[in-house]
Image (tube, rainbow, N blue to C red; front, side):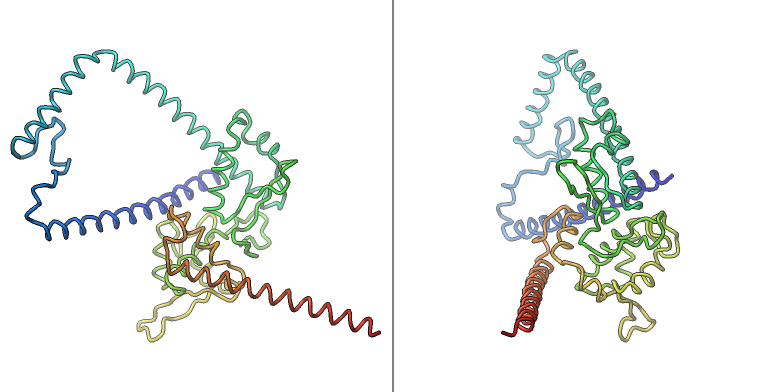
Length: 345
C-alpha cells in the first residue's frame, strides 16, 4: 500500500517538474515568436527570403499550397529519395526494425524492473530513517537490490534523488570503508515533522517547497499562491494526505507553532485574505543559497537563472559568514578573558 502511494506522489512531483519545464519552454517559444514577428515586420521587403516552416509541408513532401519552382523541386527530391530507399532497402529494413523493436522492449523491461527496485529501496530507507538506524551498502543489496547488484549505483542514485525531492532527505555516505549511509534533513533543518510517532513520515519536503514558494515570490506569498503549487502535487486543504496528514492544519497551525512559517491577514484586504512569510526559525536555519540550488534543481536549471533571488542568497551567505566570524571572535575573547582571570600573575 505504502509503495503505491509513494509511487503516486513521486509521479506527481515529476509532473510538477515537467509542468515547470513546459511552462519555461512555452515562454521561450512565445518570446522567440514575438521576436520573429517584430523582425519580419521591420523588414517586410525581405520576407520572401525566409524559408517556409516545415509544418506547411505534408508528409508526402507536397506543399499544402502552391509555392513555385523551389517547393516543387523540394517535393520531387523527397519523392525520388523515398522511392530509391524503398527499392534498395526492401525486406532488410523490416528485419532491422523487428530486431530493433525486440531490443527496445527488453531495454524497457529492464528499466521497469530497475524502477521497481528504486521504489523498494525508498521504502527500505524510510523504514531505517523512522527507526533512526544507519544503513550499509550490504543491507541495501541483501534486502532490496539482490540480483541487480551491478546496477546498485544507478538504483541508489535514483532513490536518493527522489528521497531528496519528495521527503527533503539527503542520503549521505558517512563511512566509505564500510559503505555506511545515513539520511539527513535537507538544508540541515532541525525539523522532520515526525514528532514522536515512529511510524510517521518525514514532512521536511513539504516545508522546503513552501519556504521555496515564499522565497521565489519575494519573501511573501499569498495563501492562493502556495496552494496553487501544492494542488499541482495533489495536495489539497481539507483532504487527508498519506504523508502530510491534513495539509491545511499542518501548514497554517503546526508549521506556524514550530516557528517556520508566519500566517497573517493581508493588510487592508476585504474580504480577508491571508499570506505566508518565513518564521524566525526558518530565518535562523535556512541557507538561502542551498534552498535556491534545490529549487533550481526542480526547475532543471541553475541558481543564476533567478537573478534577484541569487543576489539575495549571496547576501545571506555573506551575513552568515560574518555572524560566524563574530561568534568565533566572541568565543575566543571569552576564552582569553577566562584564562587571564584564572592566572592573574
